[in-house]
Amino acid sequence: MNAVVELRGVSKSYPGGVHALRDVSLTIEPGELVGIVGPSGSGKSTMLNMIGTLDRPSEGTVFVDGYDVHTLTDKELSALRATVLGFVFQQFHLAGGVSAVDNVADGLLYTGAGLKERRRRAVEALERVGLQHRLDHRPHQMSGGERQRVAIARAVVGNPTLLLADEPTGNLDTTSGAGVLNLLRTLHTSGTTVVIITHDRDIATSLPRQVSMRDGQVSHA
Image (cartoon, rainbow, N blue to C red; front, side, top):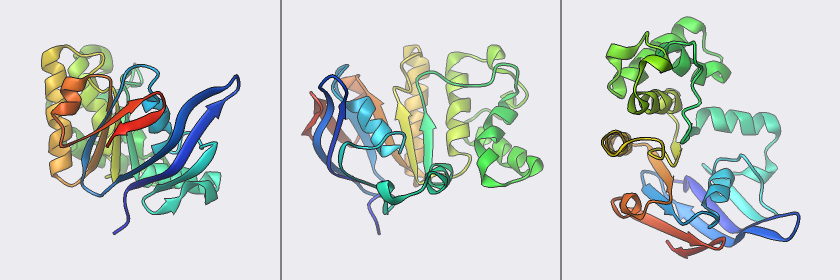
């Protein structure tokens, strides 16, 4: 079975001599629950962009689900993101005037499924995250924790192989944050590979595997 993620000698530089990643090699196997942790400026967000195929390395190779990302066309990359990857961000990125069901159904826009099928699967995803009582609610009618659960439902509605969560508790109070982490653990238990990007070492140390970053390099994996 292919590794879900494999980075080989990946570096990322930006104009002005900024080196966000320096010769990073990392493998994430199917079914892992991993925390990538480090202070601001450590390179963890750039790492997320590489794993999520949102950016390309200056040097090195990125494999996602066995595919060499560099060799894929834009269309193939879009298909990879639609079928293999799910994203959860600190900002919920929900459409304001749209119900929870339709926010989640939008996560299937690029799969070719019809509206009725997208909504049916959206209801299932919301039930999976414990929001069956909020199907018709709009984001302003929900708490921060509930909005993050909607965002997670949208990320997993397509049954991705890999879920990438970028500071998923950053805008939540302690109780809501703990609920979201428990939900991510439950999704992991059901078979999804989950990678959580965080600056919070307490969160990272509660996970089975921690990848520590500093100055664009992996200091512990």
